Length: 41
Image 1 (tube, helix red, strand yellow):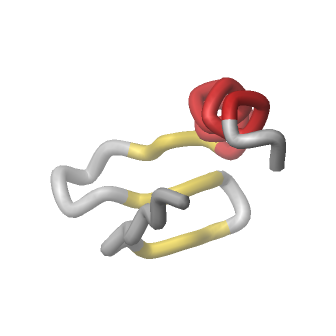
Image 2 (tube, one colour):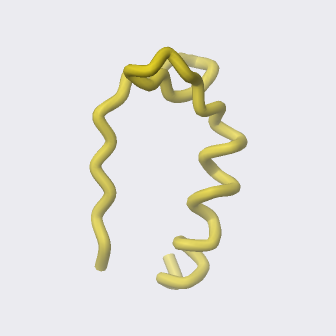
């Protein structure tokens, strides 16, 4: 089973990256959903 490790800062808007970019929660969910489906999680 794969394990993902993120080095990030979390806030109520999403994940703050070192580059200053923000990955919003909805965007992250849509990116991880296919992995969860594939893994039957």
